[in-house]
Length: 445
Image 1 (cartoon, one colour):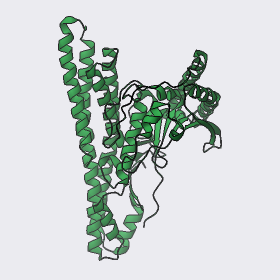
Image 2 (spheres, rainbow, N blue to C red; image 1 turned 90 degrees about the horizontal axis):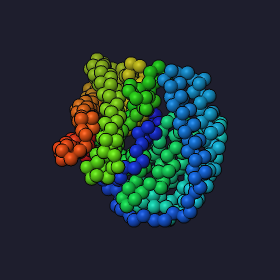
Image 3 (tube, one colour; image 1 turned 60 degrees about the horizontal axis):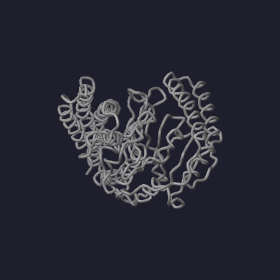
Image 4 (cartoon, rainbow, N blue to C red; image 1 turned 45 degrees about the vertical axis):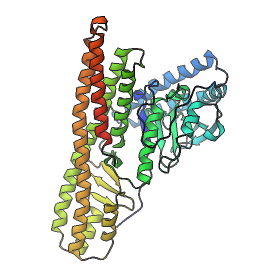
């Protein structure tokens, strides 16, 4: 009846969602204090070295966006062709990146790996224990023991992230954070308490992984997966294959970080900052829409399942129901499959769920087994309904935030007459964004 759970999935940040100059203003609870002064980090690389990497990254970016169009068009031949081109160009500049890191005072090693097609690619691995001069790595080293999780390695990856248009990723199995080669400069963006948005984003995923390791359940433990027939309903194409509901938390935090920087006056161009807030609100809304569509579908499946439990008349019928229907029970997870074959995976974390599943393994009378199974399915349904409610209500808030940021930006001349009025409006905008973030965070015990 029960089988092994599937491996962990890396959490990722889209390259198009990165603002490399945001300060660390919203950070997971229990994180260590990262405030330190600037440090000198060795010699400076030549402009020629930087231009070479920048030029190659521009080409990679163009190929990667073409690949995304091919993925959406389901043109596998073109996808493989673009993968090969990305791989070749990426491998050609990894030695240049390693050279720049060395000149910047960052100790690293270059390793060779293979993808699932047997193609070799290079990665640059930065081990925190070998780096004391780079303050970004030093800051990450101080992110110690977030509930049983410690940052391990920082990896600059030319293929596993670039090929999928991601700016970064976090792997719960290894506690490694990866940066796409197009974002490796983020290693050097820190002044005082400042860390780049991609690194911050991935550390938030580490926080959630640590929370689950402590046995703390939340609605942000739910993950969605595409099927062979249908992708996830993602509006901007960033999460067509996989999305964790954690993204509601991480994108709301990204939005709040940008808003607080605007309020503090730590932005060079106020209009550009307002436009960035509008875009970040849009990306948050896209994540909520994916959650909304998938949870509605799951609630329908769970209702059907509850009806079928009621109709069970024999023990063998119950065993058949639990092994053959659209809700599958594994050792550490439960999976719901919708009418299009898309899957939703829920880890078994809460003590009540664990107790009910233990009872289902016992040789109890049929009426007891039916009652326990119905109770468990109702818990799953309640969690889906709660996530749906959070997604819907906060999507509405984000829509209002988009409108407000647009109005302030478009209708303001930023002269002496309107400056104070606009400051008041910005203060109200930031308050709305912080309220949205609190609404998201309150769902964590």
